[in-house]
Image (tube, rainbow, N blue to C red; front, top):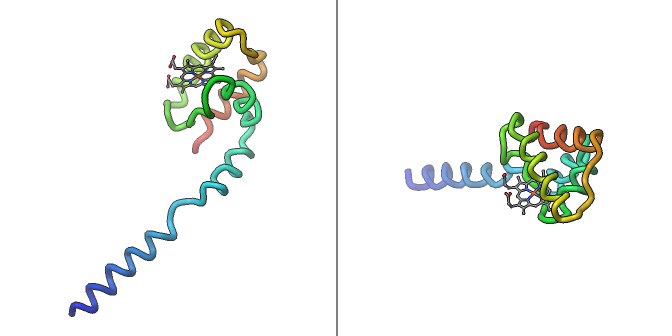
Length: 95
Ligand code: HEC
């Protein structure tokens, strides 16, 4: 009886270990999303790459507008309208 319970725990534990993606694979996947390159260029001028799951897709345009204000105030590179669209597209893509 005890052995069965132990085996069950072990099975759950081992299968749990295989889950969760390799962070390198996860990054490689994100890098293929259109707009990653632009987000990388503009959004890492002051902090690290923002996590797209941080906001609802509909909230991102406002966040980017706020960040553009900060970019102007800090004399950083500001995206063109086209680059801005690419960045928002990246942030809104399902993670
Ligand atoms: C000029 C520097 C600068 C650049 C460039 C910049 N940020 Fe920020 N960001 C900040 C500062 C300062 C804060 C913290 C203050 C705040 O939240 O307003 C911040 C905070 C954030 C936050 C956390 C706050 C929140 O509203 O969730 C997110 C997300 C974010 N930035 C996304 C971006 C994105 C996306 C880009 C690229 C389009 C970007 N940032 C580019 C300066 C910058």
